[in-house]
Image (tube, rainbow, N blue to C red; front, top):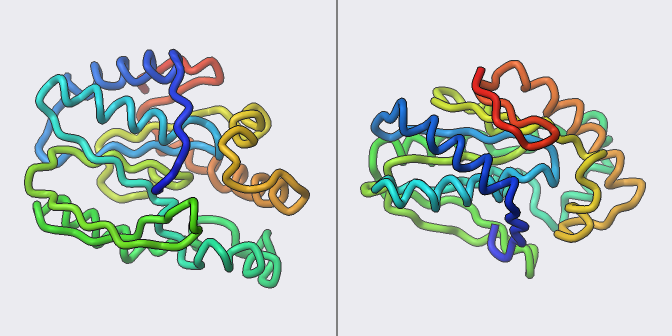
Length: 211
């Protein structure tokens, strides 16, 4: 997301280093890493640390933030959710999986790819073009990232929105009100159901466990 605020701390650096070490043991062409976790758990921070760290090893990794792929535009999403019912519509079905999968296929085949990129300042959706010919790895981060087929390393961050309220307020993506709390609770239910897909767990203390 354009204009996103990253709060990279020592815990993200240490976890990223451990994951990089794991990745380097089992490298493969056009590798895909997925990072799932609840809002404010550090998905984007971890993706950034891993991608930047891999450059030192000659691996070009590109983050793909699936929060760019909501079907409903940012300025319309709150009203759409309220009208259709938070409990009914909040979840993986909010995302444009056809475009996500197309962009992933373009990465695998080393093609030029165009996909959405949300500008958090204007709350409008731009189009971002990437030439995947020279990109070795895709790091997909988002609430439901490890739902993506054929992810080679599936990372799940165990922190829930209850523990990450401070980070959410600092990043200021959405106001913290009753509506937002209902959304976070529904996302909590949906994200926790993905934990069994993980091959790497990051604990509440941000310790890395390889499964």
